[in-house]
Each structure stands twice: as structure tokens, then as C-alpha cells.
Length: 438
Image (cartoon, rainbow, N blue to C red; front, side, top):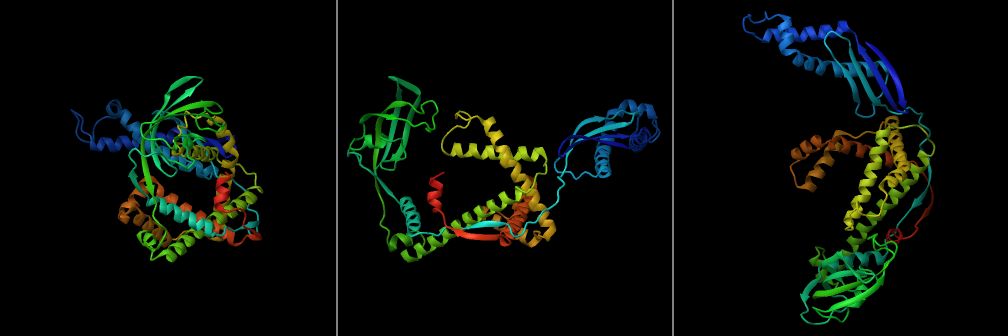
């Protein structure tokens, strides 16, 4: 077998393989002999059909059988011979198999990067803490209170702040009504400031059936790029006005929400919030570790892994737009530019994944079968499905291996955080303020 390697790009190679004619003739002969033993042609006893007849009748079948065997075997031998550590699924752009000729195979493959692991213990980072304030607790309780709101029809009473209204509206731009901007059945709570400035205020004091005209200046950041930065007129008709009655935050309310009482509700809400804030602080410290570690390395990584990471990030952005009710394909966003911008972060993330894998090997960090099984059982409980069904589903979708890798990654991150050198703690803004500033 002749094997030569062509460098296509860092971490990407093309392997040219040629299997000698003698070896291929043996393989073809073996399949024909097996076929002869099982096939009876008219005029010939079993096992006595001549080779030329078998070739005429079953040539294509024999070629496929030989191909099924020779491709994986040749691939494994060639990759082993040239010492490539394969990182992603190989491609086979050329497979030349013809009876009576050598077999030629071309393999395009991406390989694992080769690099020396530098010191990873004692990385200096700034400790982060997010304490839970009384205000944070009360905001969560207020959200729980909003979930228990009682709604009743106000009939012909005027809309007031706090009421829930259902409206339809048209948009007028430059004296012309834009037919494609008509909205029917939009709901909002007056005073929530969910609509553009001036929209909700214009409805106060009006009754069902009233039509209100309100002129507003839309900001440059408005989600509808066609209207962003322009002065438009909304022609709004009130369809329904409903009164919202919120329960008092007292012992009965706490018990309705599943707590022993008001004190227990505040205690459990605080504990849950602190857990969330701690996770946020931990994630930020891990980001610091990643940034400092990746800055020490310049090794190349498989291009397809970077592209896969870029697409994952783009998909996430599009998902968040859809959640906001925005069609990402119609939004004024240059997705190709977004992909280019994501390349740097995607490359860093892939590099970091390789660093974590090498650290796991160096430190003997692994995920045990018991740990993996415990996680699978937790998933089954969450999904309310039998464990065996969940295992089969995860195996079928490849999620089982992904789960194991995610758990290993988490273990290595905990190890790095445990061995990091913490600077002075910084509380920074509250999580709420930080999120609002984004």
C-alpha cells in the first residue's frame, strides 16, 4: 500500500492511498468464490458457475461488496501509518475501484492539534461575588404575585394605569397608512412601559371602542428597521379593558405559592437567588481563566470545529431574536458580517476545549460510570421518562457522549477554579443592574 500526505491547511491534510493490484485481485477473487458457492446459474451445478458469467451478472454487486470492506480497512491502515490523530469525520472525495486495477482512495481529514501544555495552576483572576439584596428578593416575590393576578372585565369603564388592555392598531408614516404594519389583538399592561414611549399613556382614560391617535419618534434601535429613527403615527382602537387585581403579600399568599409561610418564602427565594448569583460569579471567573489561558497559545485547530462553533453562536442569536418576536431573516442584520465577527471567539473556545482535554489527561480527571448514570437518572426524572428510554434516545442522538464530555469539561473547570490564585473580591453591580446594562 502506497501512502502520501498532502498539507491542505493547518490541522487539515489530504491522504493519497493506492492499494496494489495483487491485493485487490485477492479481494475480488474471495468475493467471487463466496458468491459461486451460494449461487446456482442455469446449466451449471452449484459452485461450478464460470467466473466470466459471474462477472457479467454480478460484477456491480461484487464491486460494492469489495468497496464496503476495503474502504474502512484502507482508511484505518493509512491513518495509522502516517500517524494522524483524527479530530473530525473524514471525507473521501476520490474512490477509484475498478476490477483489474489498483484501488485509489483520497482521504481529507482534520487532525488534532499538537501543542505543549503550559502551566495551568495558579492562574491569577479576580474573585467575583454577587450578594443577594432585600430588593432582589422582593422583586422575585413581586413576579410571583404577578402570576397570581385576577383579571375581570371593566365593561365601559375607562382604562387606568395597571389595567390590561387589548388593542388593534395601524401605523401611519408620512400621512400614509402602512397596510403590512396592521396589528390585531395586541395585549399590554398600562404602566408597564413595554410599548414605545407615549403609546400606553395615550390610552389612559379611554373606553372600549375608542380610537386614539398618538404620534411618536421611534428610536434608531427600534426592532422594525423600516420604521427605526422615524416619526410615525399609531391609530389605536381599544378592544378590551380588564382590571388586574393583585393579591396581598401575606401568609396566605405564601402558602398558596407552596411555602410554609411568608418568612419561609423569603428564605427560600433568597437561597435560590444566591445559588443563581453564585453560578453567575463562577461563570465570570471561569471566563477570566479561559481568557488568560487561551492568550498563552497560538496553535491551529480543525477549521470545521471553528465553523461549527460560529454557526452555534449565530443560531443562538437568531433564537433570541425569535423569542422577541423578530424574524431574524427580515431583521436589518448582516449575518455574514456576524459570522466573521464570531470567528475570533469561536477559535478561542475551540482552543480552550483542547486545553481542557489535555489537562484532564494530565491530571487523570475523568467521569465515572456512576457519575454518568446519576446524571442520566436526573435527566429521566426531569423528563418524567423511564431511564432505559432516555438512554436509548441519548445514544441515538449522540447526546450520551455529549453529556459525558460536558461533565468532564465541568470537572476540569472546577479543578482550574480550585487551583486559581484569587485577587481581591469584587462585588460589582448586582446581577439585575448588570443585565439591564447589556
